[in-house]
Every structure is written in structure tokens, then in C-alpha cells.
Length: 173
Image (cartoon, rainbow, N blue to C red):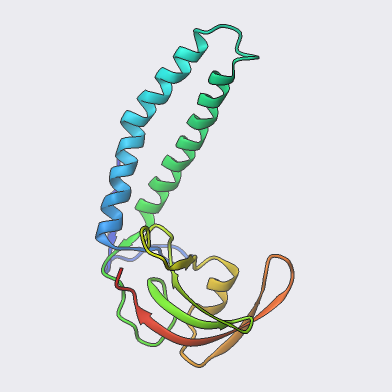
């Protein structure tokens, strides 16, 4: 079952940045969840049962492959359920010159210019844009900054990386 998505006027009790999804992205992900939760589960169960009938499970590659796939599928189902439950469904926010979820950012990152979407990668499926989560080191560092502002963040490798916001645009999909 899919909970009703949050819409722009809803309040969500959380300190985490809200994930913005377009209606198109929400509908696509909801359809994927429905498929995986029904047909996908049935198909995996049949493959596991067929492999189980082959005999000794210790040396049954087909069985282990099907069980691995089942684990990945269940993880994707949980990810989609959480995403769809917490997402705010709306059009991309109009650019106000402030870095926020759902905007396209042009930034000088470690001396090189980058253009990327700040938000969930599911929004930009089929796009050439790179996507950074609001929770990523870069995303967390720039969230709320205005054009012209500078900051830095610590990369996972421990390196300090300088960032300057050059532009904030509305995502047009």
C-alpha cells in the first residue's frame, strides 16, 4: 500500500530536508513499487522454488542468485516505500537565488565549474544532469546558500573542498 504523498501545503515532522518529487516522478516510482510488490515478488518466489527443486541448496547457484536478487528487490521496495511516504510532490520550486531541493545549481567546486540538480536522483531519471542529495557532504554544505556565497566541505576522503555558488535555476526536467 502506498501512503498519500505530501503536497506543498503539508507539514512533515522531521529535521531532515524534504525530498521533492514531481508528480511524474512520483507516479513512475509508485508504479515501480506496485510492480515489485506484486508481480516482481511472485516471479522471484517462482524462481526460488524452481531452483530449490533442483536439489542440494549448498551448491545450487541458481537458488543463491535468486535469493540475492530477492534481497535486492526487497531493499528497493523498502527504499521506494520510504521515499514515496516522505516525498513532497510538487512542481520544481521556482529559483529564488537560494540553493534548495529541486533546483539546478551551477557552482565552482574545487576550482571546476559543475552544474547539477540538488535533490533525489529519481527526479532526474533520463536527464544528463548529475544529482547530489541534500544529505550528501556537498548538498548539506550548500543548502540555503545564495548566489555568490562560498563555503567548503570535507569530502569522504578527508579533503577540504571549496565551493562557490555561481547560479541557482529552476529545474525544468
